[in-house]
Image (cartoon, rainbow, N blue to C red):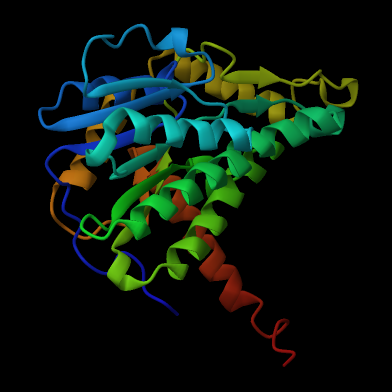
Length: 296
């Protein structure tokens, strides 16, 4: 099996960061964080670039662009605009694929449009931006290499009731990224990191959280999804969750520490505990039922 991230990553002076979904939440915090760092340059993107007004307009090291990750043309146009803006110094060093939203509710009531749009945004959007970035990173003769952060979630490893299509999108990001990372030639020095935060303290502005219509068959308080909603609600009221700026700091630390990049990066004690518990249970089941699987 082809190894991944097999040499230390060195963040260059004048590195260019391209971040999707910068209108709010994690994307906004990462963009703001990078914008304060000396010798770093930023391409901040959002479907509506007016939502990027928190960033200065007169800084040549900051480029604000419209980017709809569900549109192939929009992704291509954003990369072309970035190349035109930075000119001869253009390259892509770090990509943060953050654009997306949470779709919650009873899966039986989901429409085809809701399901398709969620996967289109979370998964195919990440895939489009990633492959455009890989093309730039591998073709640079004097500046080959880069780092791609694909924002997954605890929800990309552990599944909970009431978020089936959100889980589907995040699980897809995990498997797809692992496969693509193994396609890279070691000499290209293109690194991948699948980021798996647990609950984040965001307000889900600008449509970052959507809900399906409730289904009467799942409405009772003792239904698993309703019980989870109540538990999460109590946690949010008590102030639980990771501060978005902490995620920004963690990603910058991974990019700038001159060490090998982890393929998987769980963030937060809850993510660590629940992912560890799931993997331990799966190993236990693997041993318990190995005779059933011994068919070839």
